[in-house]
Each structure stands twice: as structure tokens, then as C-alpha cells.
Amino acid sequence: MSIPAILIATVIGTGIGIWWYSDSLFGKTLPKNIHQKNKSIYLFIFLNTLLTAIVLGQFIRAFNTDPNILQGMLLGGMAGLGLITPAVATNFLLERKTMSHLVITVLHHTLVAIVMGGIIAYFS
Image: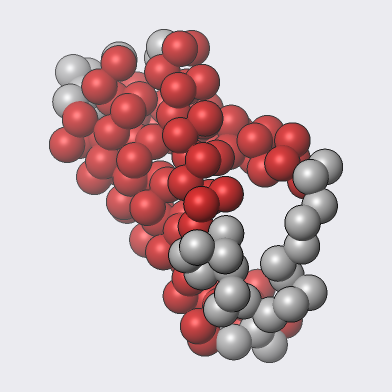
């Protein structure tokens, strides 16, 4: 697993998340209490994305002896749809959040996992 690949994937994944939830994309769709301009959360977002990239890198290394970008993206998509989506959906149902909020969040996490999987595999 390449540390530069993990860091590049983390920066790009964090950037996608910041853009995804900005007013220029889906920020205005979310409830007001969700969309806050608290700058201190960006460190935690970065650290969570870093953890996701590290684990995804381990998956790619474990399941592919010679990974390529498409295999990395496929594993990212599988993680997004098979691991992240059910966990997020369970929380959203228990918290009684809206279906549109669920779809926006699940698509964000799945897209980030696909992009990061491709980046990590490309540099591996």
C-alpha cells in the first residue's frame, strides 16, 4: 500500500465531500441543522476519510495481487454499496431522516469510495 496514494486519495475524497455538501451542489437540499459552517469539523472529516482510504487500501491489497484502476474502483463501489450503504441506511432509518438526505449521503460515500479505490489501485 502506497502512503502517497492514500494521502492523495484522502485529499481528493475530502474535497469531493466538501464540494458535495456545499451550497453549489446538495448543501441547500439538506436540513438547516445539518449544513453548518463549522470549520473545526474539517479535520475530523479528513481523518475519517483517511481511515476509509487506509482500510480500502488494505482491501485492494488483500483481494488483488496486481490491482488496476478498474479493480480498485470496483472494490470501492462494492464497499460503498455493500458496507457503507447498509450501515448509513440503518442509522438514517432509526434517526428518521428524510429519504433525499439518505440518497445524497449514500451516493456521496459510494462515489468517494469508488474514486479513492481507483486512485489507490492506480498507485499500487
